[in-house]
Length: 337
Image (cartoon, rainbow, N blue to C red):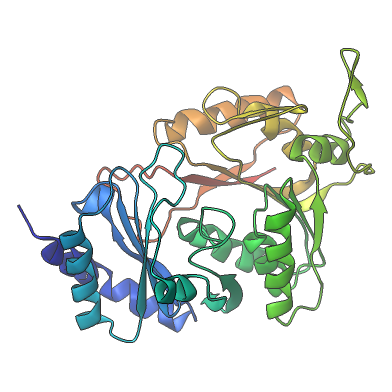
């Protein structure tokens, strides 16, 4: 069996060309080690600017394993500091306490860069996931290429990475929608880090309520006699580019997000909020969902809604997220509609 050091060294060699290309794109955040494919399932190691973030999901790292990881990166990337987040509990929340000095490092507010766009980053904050999901880099790069002069709707925006990238590219109007005000506050701070001609808007709302109104379907105040929670009232509006990146599963009074069994519940209103001749980028991060079958279901759903999918372009995650069989868990497709 290969040692951790050997696995990390092999991963670094496999990324040498990509890392050079990312540096040329003004990117300093990427995955250093993707354990599920590179020999240590449940372990991920990412570079975020001047820090390295090691995370374990299936089990805690043993002291000797963590020491080996630290020693390898002290040798190969001595200018970076390493933070370890043990997320092996069932709820994936960080469980390991850090010494005070390390805790201070983990809570530093750093600025990282991706494709020339600046973002805030903290290894530890009130939430659990990093503020920028690195496997979505290829999609944000595509948005940068497409968004100039366009109106952009970013659904399930989290910390507004896609929306800020769109604004950086010169989008005429950007609307980020998310139910978590804490995420949107990071998104607003991300926007302020960048020189933007148009400041993205952030809408604190359940995505179902927002996109149904924008699409023209409408969101009633009462459903089956039950009063809905308060929600922002919106006029119907179509966008040139819509980005749809839902979580695997979530439930609210307005609806259920289920990427395995009912992607269409979100896809239809997102499609109807896309202007004819526009673009809709859809993401599905469930590994067991077959990409081609999922795409076929989107085309059928579009036809039922009276819209045609004119083109479909797969956006493949960069090589720092390798796949053993070429079928990436994260599927991203750009639809011309």
